[in-house]
Image (cartoon, rainbow, N blue to C red; front, side):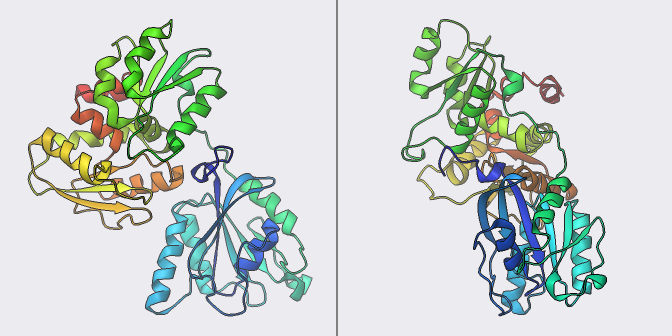
Length: 401
């Protein structure tokens, strides 16, 4: 991903759902003005969700998702349907696409109920309007008739989608913690796990947010932190560190300088920081054999000292003196049944959008399983969690109990 592009996780996700051969792929191509999806009269041509990042006016930067037909059958079909339903976990706006010649089926109505249950704003789109008499085209505030073949009502569909977009209050990333012209020191280790030739996405996003709010980002490795702090000329407004360097950075950052981590900022930005801080206290009651789920939102090549599979289990054992059982998941492979886990430890979710992260946290809460994230757990095991959340008084108070 270029640093000039809006990250996928920050884009509006638009999911196209419906039966096989309802016209989803043709509609996507008409809406986007591109040949994004393969179109074929053969049922089940779309076998896996297809993601396309693009600019779509009047919505702006979006990810358009073409899904397999939700009426697919057979064992392979069930897997495709499961993947299509996983798309709903990250969908901000949905389009239920139905064949206008056949009308809404029971399957389509069940799909409408599923979207409503998940609180996903959606439109029902009846396709092939050019083949259906206008008098038979029943539309309302939730239904629109279109033709991918002639382009009829495609512009209106995009306008209706934009009107559906909820005006959600966007959580701040770092802007509310800093003042214009503050120095903000970002500690970014460059080691074997660092991507070649670039910064990782959370670091890019924080730098952008700092700049956007008139403050001054100062980027350094942990080896140069002491030198940086002593030569700035004034006390920085905030130090933000990669979680893996937390212990060293905390030791070298004077107590009168606020300190937190990229991971803690993202726990607040995309999820529920208060729930994640409450969740990490489960470590204090861990017993031998308790199962911990270590979950990452993306897949990547594992290093010999990988944070999720090596370092976090080591820190948990050292902190608790117990020998729990660790289970690992990555990418879209987040388990449905979480009840066997004593605690879920999630990555910072830089590759997941806020809806999917909140879905995962909500699923854990429904099943009564505590949930935390990498940075919060690392800070807890290093004895510096209280300091790293001091700028959030209501959350710091949880640790006094």
